[in-house]
Image (cartoon, rainbow, N blue to C red; front, side, top):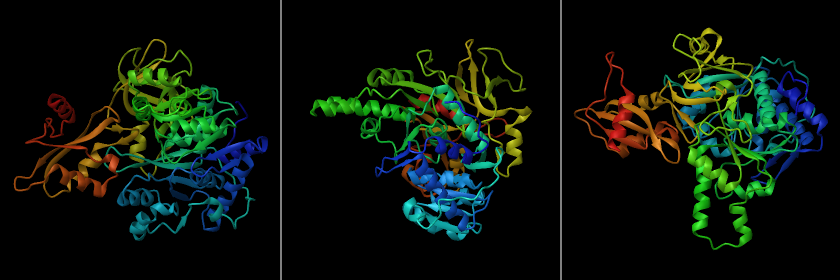
Length: 519
């Protein structure tokens, strides 16, 4: 669906609501509630007035610590409607990690679900800039005394809309600033590439604290005048029933989800005692489902092939980062897709550069760089990181890839040591620093190791101090006290020494070879 451009996200919603008043926009799988475009706009206005009446002004940051829910989406858009900046907080983080994010972005308000209140109680006194905390379990209850009429405010395309934290190569996450223009551009690019229309119904099962869910299945649905269904989390056992109930046409995913659906289908087939009708739900080959949009890490070719053959649903792989709002490339949503490729640029420019920022020829390996209206403006209060990332006017992704003669791009490696586990980005430096604080650890180095289900798992190589002892369980449990569980090592290898380069740098690639040799 192509329409006139909107300057900001408030205009985008209000223009859609004006044309699609009674069309259902948002479905909550948790409780069966739904909102038309008009009802959603009214709910957003009530929430926006709640923010305003509690001291939130244009440019202020509002942190969001919520589960996947209609409330999360309403909270996002309420911020944008008054020119405030939404800060999604990863709900998997531990208290001290949450404290860093909320404190670093200088949030003035927090909207929190009661299930996370204990975490906030533990850190509240360490957040002097956080003026107000409001429980936002039920938007109807929280906003019942607030008006559905909202004052006008001047919001520019270049104004900040989201500050989302990416795992940091130096140990601490960086706040990535995305503008109204960035978000609208990416929603438009995805809509046009995928040919979404108002007839589509997208499923949001990726976490809304990541840009994938915000951009690919929420704002894209809004841009296309389509509908979105939000589920609390991915469940292989419930997935096909949701698809059937809501007539889903597409969903956002990572490779791990596809593997889990195949595994569940295989288990069900081996224990087949159910009726034919139930069997249909387990392996429906849905008449409505057109494709799975998959990102984060490449889908193994065998998984892609088996998924498409088993479920009759195309897998459309893509590539992107928070810094590119979300999606930079997608394969074509048709039979010209190429397995193993992350596709073609869907709107931004994309090049392969060498170490001197010179463009490389077809087939040559180099760093992937991006430029375009969906590329973020920079890192919050981190000029050095921003300047480095935008060397010579291009955003340097740190990913290594190449382009073939037909313009398809391929990801070959990562310049950084980043680990991608089931769609979550993990930087080893953050884990290294925690391990170094353990009284028994002399040296530590974390790497990613292959994992059949999650793509990669976290492993740590540790040298203990001569007079100290610690077990694998000791160190893993120590990490779990300070880091989100998904970041914590699953294996600890105790070694006599860790290979170092001439400058004393720990050679993590040598550790990867050592792990491979161990089998």
